[in-house]
Amino acid sequence: MKKFLSLVLSIVMILGLVACGQKAATTTASADGTATKLVMCTNAEFPPYEYKDGGKFMGIDVECAKLIGEKLGVEVEILDIAFDSLIPTVMSGKADFAMAGMTVTEDRKESVDFTHTYQKAVQAIVVPIDSTISSANSLEGKKIGVQTGTTGDIYCSGDFGDAAIERYSKIIDGFQAMKSGKIDAVVVDDQVASAIVEQDSTAFKILETAYAEEEYAIAVKKGNTDLLNKLNSVIDEIKSNGELQAIVSKYIK
Ligand code: ARG
View 1 (cartoon, rainbow, N blue to C red):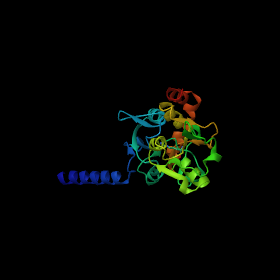
View 2 (view 1 turned 30 degrees about the vertical axis):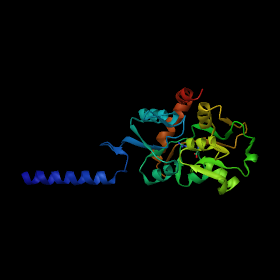
View 3 (view 1 turned 180 degrees about the horizontal axis):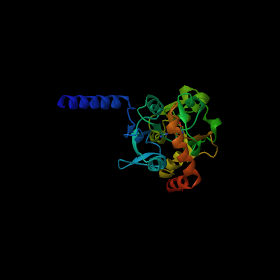
């Protein structure tokens, strides 16, 4: 009997180890196989979508992710990494999804699957308050600051050449560089531009003309239709019942 018990025990232990070894690096599964925790990767350098306030994650995406977690009955853990690491991290399975004011692009769609979109944005051009730059055309030959790997980076390097681009891992550093005269303009998502310029309205102005229009969505690992469908149903729900707008209105007046 003792022998039998210890055999059963070791089988249980081995099965347990196998189960642990097989599950995704991040997703914690309960006994029935449903996830109890989802890991979201983001880059918390992007107010009002994601930023840190006294060590606490805040912002539209952070609150939406929390709401998504509540509706799916799972805990959402946040992994704060560089923007250009988000897609590789989702691809490797180290995170279940990326939510970071991330624009849907054809290129990115080759690496990840995107949910339904949840916000519209435009790439804004921000210049020093006394600048003579008045449109995208007058950016020719100027130094342009962008966040590494963002659509601002991709579009500007394409349009104005690599030499014109100064890349920053935090866009706030681009604004600092512009303040000290090192660069002539910053190209960044409009709502982020507004949030930063609001804090420094005597130093910068946002040009009237938008540079590009885009839409944000959540990225999941290619082929993870289970999670994609779940996220889509929550996005649809919070878009139509006003919960998303309620969160947005807390951050964007
Ligand atoms: N929307 C732009 C993009 O997808 C910028 C996003 C930057 N997000 C961030 N959390 N830093 O490239």
